Length: 626
Image 1 (cartoon, rainbow, N blue to C red):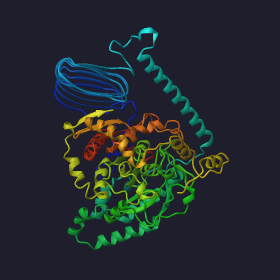
Image 2 (spheres, one colour):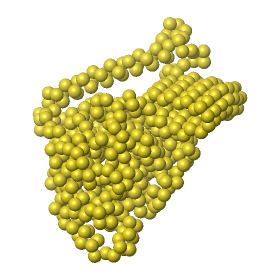
Image 3 (spheres, rainbow, N blue to C red):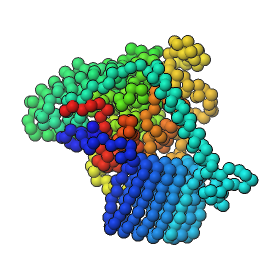
Image 4 (cartoon, rainbow, N blue to C red):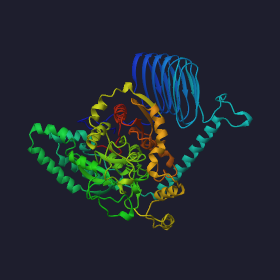
């Protein structure tokens, strides 16, 4: 079943699409005569204006905006976007990421490698760039831009070799690509075999049999205010569902189900006594009234578990609510439970020595991601309508991708981080660590932001609704421990920490630095400035959240570098929204992320809503029988 999140309707959409059917993200806006557009890859968005345009895209992400007559653009690689204006332009991009904007006369630009950013204006310019991503802005007429390989010289061509018998850049690139594919295949088979031998058996997810579970959070809030459904019925449905699915996903670590049911009954009694006019006002004063929500375990919920996944903190309880939880309670929300995390929320899978391992709802042998993996798994299973997560290096977006839901990492300091985590607040980096919402509906994200940050995110929904997507430029692309002693304990089967946490601690120990860690945000200032020269106001960057479908448990340990797709935007303090894009042929989620400049959260959310409208968004991992 495919989720659509239309208010008042069951989140049911078009029949499930496979990878081949959703090879392309096509959000085209066509104006003119006889347009033709062909897209290949995970994502392609085009806006064509003029006569007889033709665009072909191949790769993971391709977005083009073409204006003029008879343009032709071909993009190949992981990410390619072009904006071409003028006559008879031709652009070819190959590599991991290539973006070009061509306007003017006879420019020529070659970009090879993973990173190149150029802005060329004038006649007959030539620019060569090498690095992690290729972005070019060329102005002129009859432009030609070719992006190839990893390294090159001015005389290097596609099939040539360097003097002296040295291998060509293309050959090296292809060899490295082949090597990475072989290593990935070997590792995947190894971890698949490990799961088959040691993973254990888990019961399948029970079917969804209550239509309440399929509604968006906004719809539930409106129905409760209007008396179409009682708050008690809503909370009861989610309590039953959470208990039913937890045997499969192991997401809930501590709950307050009985207290939540009593609070829901209080809401119903209060609504019964209110006149109709005052009920309507609740939409603005208490928009979340009667709607249940859940939080990851390091988000303080008074009286619930606050171990941080550490054995040394077992049985610790939160003495108060986090500020974001207090705001949601004030808006009428009802907390249900807290969910599983990795130790200290510092890993990209969800497993610890206190509560065990959380599983992906689509395939129990796969990881739900981390560190908000418990929230993402519970949300995807229809066991909560709204989740509160945190993100310091992809901890909202990675689980959202792995579990096929929406998640938004807001701009730095948009939402209060007070009483988040188990470490002293003075050590909490409020620039890179943020709190954000996770939902099954893209439209619930802006609504939740208004509740979680009533001042900073005021009128977020109206800002999203007023965003004209045709005007957006889219680019693609505790105390000290003995480390040796803890390794010995782990080798003897009595470890207090997981292998992932010990590995990270060892790497940190080996990489000693005299730089004050409190200055760490400034390490990324040059990168942030470079990114902001490209992603300015009115622009978004679309790129994969992870380079492959959800991993087997522990497979991310040798693939830690894959998380850099997300961590980069924590360091540069940019908002980013994870968007599900359907399922692969094997039934696993796939998706992408939309990034904007700091303070431009509404652009991310507007594009996410457009993608949901076009492709359906969340798909239920369990059978639906309603």
